[in-house]
Length: 465
Image 1 (tube, rainbow, N blue to C red):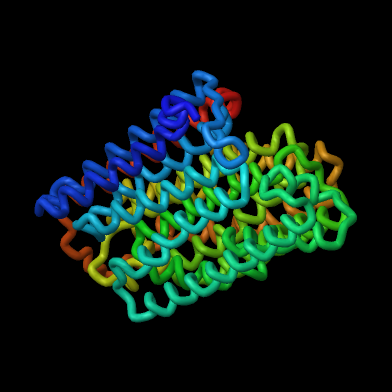
Image 2: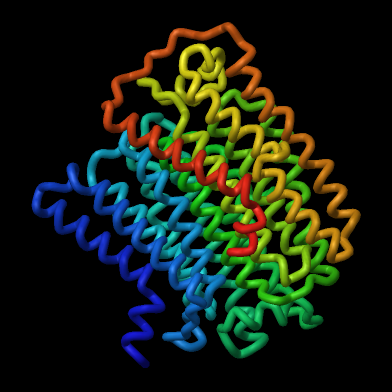
């Protein structure tokens, strides 16, 4: 084993680990509150830059053959996940002042990066658990509601169920193939062997649960609503991105055929329809985003129906656009002393008259999430459904498009509240520090500029994925 290869191939992970060590040291030294955010931002930004640089240079290596490898696509996936975490850190100043949040977030990001390089189910499972365990704690870390403990417990139990299903599926796959390589999963997708098919179904259901696909979505609305705003943003964007990119790696170059085709098509389609319908009735912004994310998870899993050649590209672009837009919503959300009050959609009534900048940011995000051209959400959905149609699944593509139209209503409802309502209730904005709000504005502007870049140069972005 070449030590220089190990160091270079795992440099993004090493930088995250270095950040965690530095955070622990400064906490012991008693300077954690002042330097924690800066250290975390530096570690994540450096890791994202290194991953992007190695990807652009075409770096390929397998320091742990059969378990861990990197290539340009893998490194770009890591860069996307890490870059999307930067606005989460910036907006976290309102809710977290110590080192606990940055350490847990960096730990979770380490698992997210590990998943993207997994060549065996051992590495994949290890990365998934490192990704998930800190998030269970994050839901409770700065809780402001009594139901936070219940939501965290539900997330923990169902997350454990997903892990158990994954392990059972992996054990059956190992019994069928005799190896733990994820490359065997794509072969098992078309196998007629009963054990291999059972293994595939269990592994798929585990990832459906992690991605909040109907009917395995019950944890998402409660966890999103009960967590603080930065944690909800992290779950909605980073966790989902890490899981979906890992699923694409798991499927490899496999082309789906019956009966697995129906499993991958029907449940995501139900998620699209149910997520959009349920979001219409929500009075809580975070619950609405939760059901919206369930629908978007359906679109993302729909990409698996498309041709293998364009699968990773479509999912990566979708996750980039979806992540930037959700982060823009959370970063621009006005503060309030009462978290429950801040989370109510009624809080957004007349927002344009109180805070034009916040209303414009949220409005732009809502239009794009609805898939309205020329925003990047439209291009992202176009790529997904174009690939599905090109693979010959026209019927499923039409049904998915019809389901996507249902989501336009609740996105436009938010815009109507902000711009067309004169009922501006008195809201206690609390007392966030000027520095904290300044960082949230920086996060908003960064997401907006990145979104504009994706909108104006979608072809360049797609070509780089």
